[in-house]
Image (cartoon, rainbow, N blue to C red; front, side):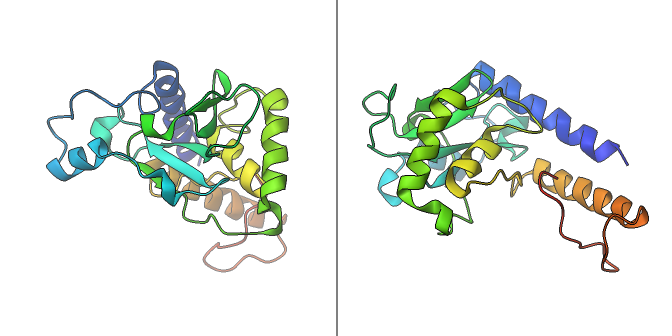
Length: 208
């Protein structure tokens, strides 16, 4: 039962190595992969229209140097627009966590940027609250951790005041679902969950 978790860890390690090397979160590749479709290459080269984003939106981008551009794992960031923050340079419009720490950057330097599906409005998504969390993260973002404090945890915490990890639409996301279902079933057998449906679709505990 440990194999799905090992798989997820390996994928996240790939994420860290790509972030550190600049793959997928740095400059756009100069030449599209020969195996990529022409439509994918055109989409990657097209300029990103940031007018569609609002302050606090969670964005993700595909890591380009991973398995010929297939969606193995995503990098997450928060759109901050033209709001001013300490250390933020002119033109920078997003905030992210990498193994090197919390940094501002430009959405236009990314490829295959997507807006997170559940950017819903909640009491915690008030602009002033998100702004305060960003200011706090500037001095207290914590050490990068694959399991407890990665880029998706960071971005969703700023928006929702809650750390989430789903990796929707990626191989890593599917593996995470397997891990969570496995943990739920184990909890059922151990009597830690009062009610578990026959399909094992109990609500997972926070963080896993």
